[in-house]
Image (cartoon, rainbow, N blue to C red; front, side, top):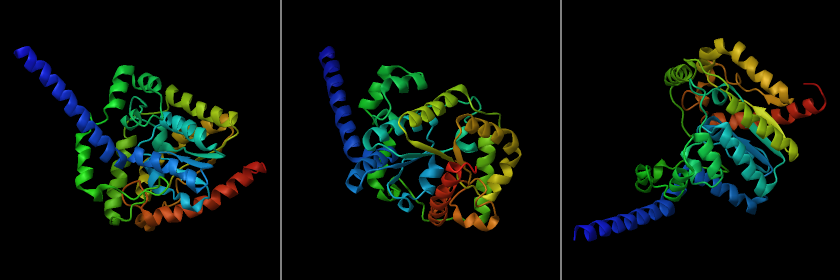
Amino acid sequence: MNKEYFYMSVVLSLILLVGINQIYVDHVLEHKELPRTQKQFLQMENKGGVSELFLGNSQVRDGFNPLVMDGSFNFATSAQTIVESYFILKYADSIYHLETVYLQFDLYPMYGTADGSIKVQEGHYFSNIIPIENISSVNQVSNLEVLIRRSFPVLGNGGDFLNMIFPSRRSTMIRGWTPKDRSSPGDVISKEAKRKAEERFGQPSGLNSEYLFYFGEIVKYCQKNEIEIILFSTPLPHNYVSKVDYLVPERREILYSVKGDHDLVWIDFYREFNLEEYDAYFFDGNHLNLNGSLEWSSKFGIDSAVYTSYYDLGLI
């Protein structure tokens, strides 16, 4: 009797897990950032496809408006690592055959935690963009664990059901761009900028061999497939810039060295809004709001054309 009860409990638990997981996949997962971005990317087939791809973290996701550049798509995601950028690039090119990739290249995404670790985020477990074996090798987990997480994304994500109850939690997304239509008072922006700068750069950190490997793989892939690659940095509020300025000579020298090794264009917007009057362009310590995004995106569209023209002419 006890055995029958045990087996019945196991079967019912599995059925319940499968049922809840299916509800999660059908009604919750689609509202998470990566699945939404991926879905919009595939829908671009009906709009002429994608020729220009933007990769980077949430600063790019919130900051670049792809509507200013024909054929462009913003595939930046929260805390996107260079590993994820590499596989998103390959995935995107396999569908639309890209002409240009714009890759975020500045202090924030290039320097990791104190141990310099780079991980594949869980969102990619079920996106099918990154192969299981690559996730397991980078994250140092078994293929079986990745497979289970990929098959049952609800595990550990039960809190996401709140998205069904509170639709307002879903931000607007246009070609991957998620503008924030709000701004905070200047003193709040200043405090947030300082806090984020100290949190990110208050301890020793740096480029590691894993980062350099995948950056090199991106460059090699683009060269092999005749895709132009352009590096860029995003604007930061003046309080953030002032807090990390002492790091610039040493750490930026490393970035320039990496860029120089591959002979690439780097459009540097690091100081673009480095005045207190531009605090109104940010909604927190390092992310642009809607107005800031529109201003920067328009400038980016112009400056990128100018920079690449100068580069082609050998002027930079």
